[in-house]
Length: 457
Image (cartoon, rainbow, N blue to C red; front, side, top):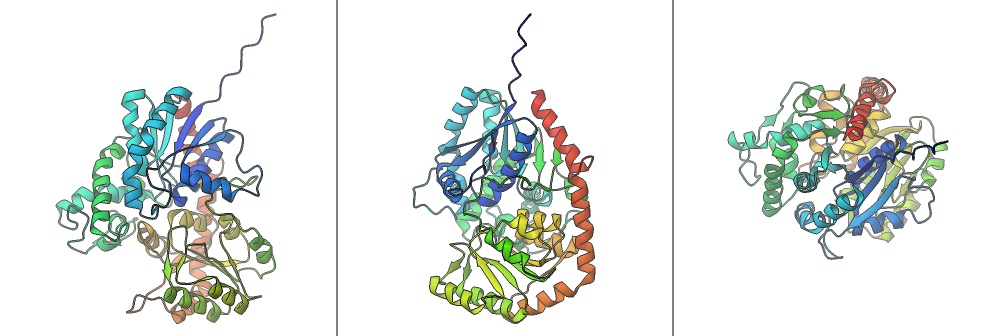
């Protein structure tokens, strides 16, 4: 009897995120989905971030499923370099990483790279090693559409050629897209210096042709939530909302998750807790931190506040411990939270958020109303979606000093949790999001299309 044929090797892909927390997480979520569908994934970190992820998982087991292999390359910065300077970090990545990535693609016989749009420089390997590249947007489809419009905004005199605003007007590309002021465009707010803005705009010009001609662009969004924007992005497949697997923890967090907050939430009344989290880049000065702390106390509601290690300028451990003591029994403070588990908890009433796209999609997926406090980049566009298009949140207004006062926080929390129309719209979009990722839904079908594309080559 003839021996049975050897099993077919699992299809093998490389996943390449920009080295920032908000970029790593959705691509790790996609990687989990691909492994579940029979793929092997080479997940590329920088050396610096791989060490952070490993340290964050020090007390966990099973966070990295079989099929995901974490590899890393240098990022071109000194160990003490400022990796919060996104423009500088991004500018040095191609020279630092491209050679090692090319060598791995050749040695492993990789046919597809799923690359963050912010890492689109890897597409040059298509010509040298014959690899296919699928681009992945960690931003909304609206931001991709705005990005493709930057040359026209310069031609029309809204921006100059180095990213400064010449005419601050409202920009709305389609009726179902968010209206955004020119001064709130991602490429204007991403860097606070002229040199930084110049680097960002130069990158937009360099990579826009790559985006326009990409074989496929994967977006963490869904058809019903962004129909106008998706119509403006070529070869796009919306597969969101992506989410963490129900059976395991994600291997991609830069800080260890404090899961003790889930037991604390279990003790709270339904729809009572204000959840406060500002992502991985936001930095507040002491004046803003104090107003926020006082506003949460004034609200009279239980709250869960994520204060990561580098969130504040000027607030030491002494202030934090004193505040913990002050709010003991009413509020809980953690360094990093299992956010999707928190947002799905029945005790959560609202989400005070920086409106990063991952947080936006997670809040939408779980039907949680938003209190919006954007910091930079695409977050103003996302705030506009939440407040002006979807109607699932309200905006916090700063005073003439640029400070959101404790009274504003208290009043807006009360307004938000008492607004039945906002709650109804949040529930409607939750249903739409869940339908999109369920079997037969638009995002589920698009994921299967993408998987078939990866298998064909």
